[in-house]
Length: 235
Length: 223
Image 1 (tube, rainbow over the protein chains, first blue to last red):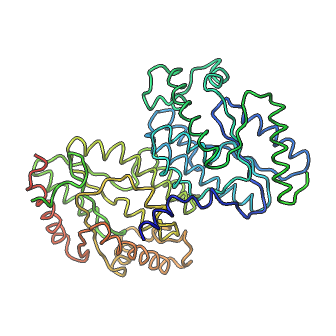
Image 2: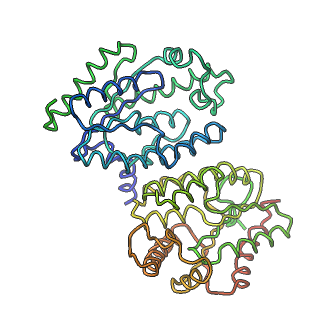
Image 3: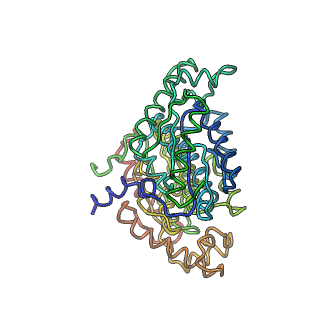
């Protein structure tokens, strides 16, 4: 009995099984500066131009909680577990109110970051990876999940050319180093390691973030076309 | 005296009073707090849903009916994590007797009644330390109803109106509280609650609690 329960708890039913909804869920993942938002914006414009119904949703943007989380981050008030749970609230709110209804209605849903962001960041903060995966048990498996792989030094050059890394972005809450730049590299390297492990675990499609904007977009459109064809949608 | 060894690795003691709304928890908590303080122990009290970070968000979201069952569970879990890590554990580490009005058992009962998978909810709280003592104020649902109608009145969520059992407030409250009581029933055994008949007088209940607490204090583990 207990073994059975335990096994069930390790099994992420929804995140590993195909959904049966009419719509298509695409998400992009990667650390800040990996170019995922640029790619998603290009994809969105293209899909709209060919007449597809598209909805866009991004990490930490739910009206329910995102302001609270941002405020708490500013004040450096969050323990890793509270940090994790607040982002789970945001995700759950968007999933139930935006993502799932749009998928049921047949939309293409474009998500800038998905549950994998939580898995990568929270594990990098020392939260038990199984615990976080169980928290996000209700998430729907994306039809296409793209991970933009980048060296943390390259990402830092892109995002920090005119500012220092932010407190949580640099993992300063973990006291890895008193220097935000050094802390950023240590922390984001951990996040990247978690992402890379998820390429196999969840079938994320890994793209090299240093490739040209054009070549990445060509690949992404090709992959999405194939996903849509499988669903009987010709574009 | 072996049996009163602490159930966690902290210096202090963790004592919980559980029970549904209107079961008399806060009255008993006040009495217990005073009687322990009178013996020169440091006491800290923490109530359910009071984290400076999230409690307001929950109240506001409830007022505006913004919550679904999942966000309801997760927000309470976040509130709990914030209080546990910022207040409760630091107090336990420095040797306080921490008295809690509700613990994660409340979340288990309410979330499961709202249709959440029990293993999912248990996972949310699996890092919580085991209390040294958990008192449970056992109240029949009809007594509860009278108490609540006579004091605070029926609240939307406490009546489980969000779950949609019935559009009639009274009926909904009755069904919701009954279902919560069913959850407490299995938890009594699983989590080793000291169940106390909530219809006893305030004084009688206090004496029962006080004597249980005294047994632990007399072991001298806090000295």
